[in-house]
Image (cartoon, rainbow, N blue to C red; front, side, top):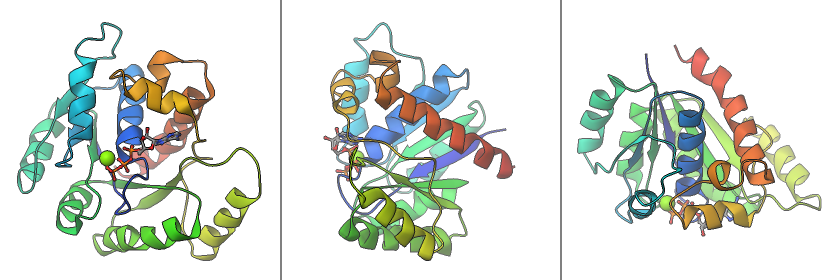
Length: 212
Ligand SMILES: Nc1ncnc2c1ncn2[C@@H]1O[C@H](COP(=O)(O)OP(=O)(O)OP(=O)(O)O)[C@@H](O)[C@H]1O
Ligand SMILES: [Mg+2]
């Protein structure tokens, strides 16, 4: 039995690739067989994966970079011998995002807490709704202080949009780990970035069970 999770957000730079890698590694470290798919021609995760080959402490997982129509076939094949598949998607690519969303049981939409980011998320959320896939917003780069998060949470609640756990702060640990081909749970397992990823995973697990 396998579960497929698409990380989609048409707005660029929202944190899709960082979150896809972080969740894939955390799931793999919890004993699951995990495949990470990079469907973005920018190949951000491909670069990360290349760096990862020089890291003896990297948690083992499968990586593939299928594009366009090949994504569906790759997902079907990888489902057979993996517990979880995470698909990173490109920004500004409705057709390709649709393929990934259609293949998924859960869509995670990373979103920075701001009006423009919320408005830009609408296209991705509509796509998930059109494909009848459950979507959860993952607030990313949330400022440590101020009322912004509460304001955005109120906006989301008013629109009936659900979030995945409390979200992720604006933390350099995500970026420094990524630049080494690792993730925060690997480089600083006791740090706040790692703890936030684990909280996100905890919020995700019950949703994965619901999809079966
Ligand atoms: N929680 C965070 N804290 C600090 N920096 C972050 C966080 N999440 C992402 N970043 C940084 O923001 C930038 C964009 O992140 P990332 O590449 O994951 O976004 P993306 O949505 O995949 O972008 P694209 O749309 O171009 O594919 C990167 O420099 C990344 O290191
Ligand atoms: Mg990306």
